[in-house]
Length: 177
Image 1 (tube, rainbow, N blue to C red):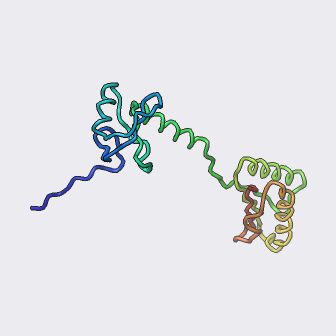
Image 2 (image 1 turned 60 degrees about the vertical axis):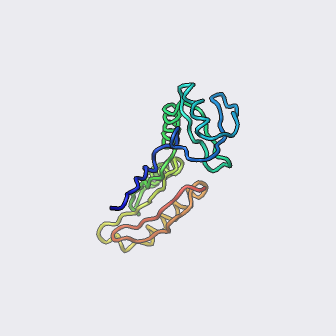
Image 3 (image 1 turned 180 degrees about the vertical axis):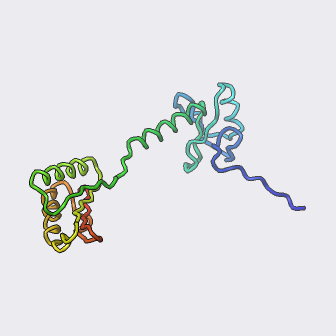
């Protein structure tokens, strides 16, 4: 019967007895270097302080280990990851709908909405809707969309030119980099 080797899950941290390097560089809790030694020599130093020997960088030569409280270290890492996710902004697509016979004030309101969305870092889908025979005037709708792109050219770039989709004509604007 063959012997099946149990492999440890790769997500387990490399701490204490799991460190499998012949020589490691050991850093104390205050940041001072204790020198290069074997993990078997460094582990009693960590246990003596009631802390863990944690592999910080396995890419270095020799690998770097630090004596620290692993629970606290893990908590700090998760806290940093949460903060990074919080600051991350995903660009949503916001839609501004209008008709080609739009009044000047209504157009200015849609323009202000589009401007606000773009300044918040979102993309804007400008849509002109047609009803009934209005679809014959798609050239007027294209003019309106081009006018909007022109009015927003300082802060936005046209990602998709005006294009007819069924009973609508739409254009996609994205914030300038």
